[in-house]
Length: 161
Image (cartoon, rainbow, N blue to C red; front, side, top):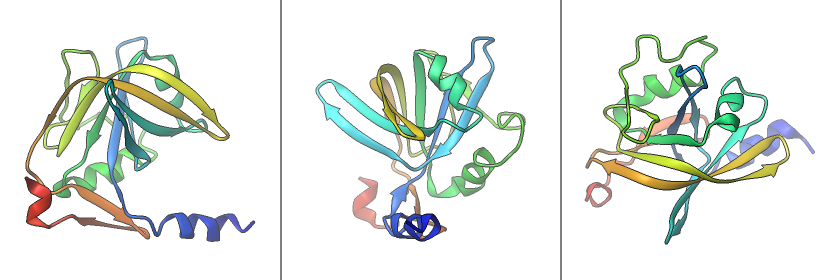
């Protein structure tokens, strides 16, 4: 299989853009940009994100019982790029606060979900992290979308209700 071509095929599916965050054992915030996010269940409220095992944030997420998913708004493309970069501490110079539940939250996001780890599923070079949502909030701002290597906003007024 041509891996580069396969990635291009997968990239033809538009996705939302999130930043998944957690604290490490020393209380330091960690986060990464992820577009493999979905709702799994409404009762109980469960979401999933797929995390590359080779990434620097994986050890923190693998050891944590809590995490947050920040669904980025159209104005947060620079933040998406920053959290996908090789910057050592992605939270340096980034506005954030700790949720009541104990995960880093980013202001200005279209939605934020604070989660307990529900379960983990081994999936080759990734781990599927399932989270039970304990708290959430959202704002009527257009979400950031990614498709075929480009970012764009979902401008439809119906999507803002």
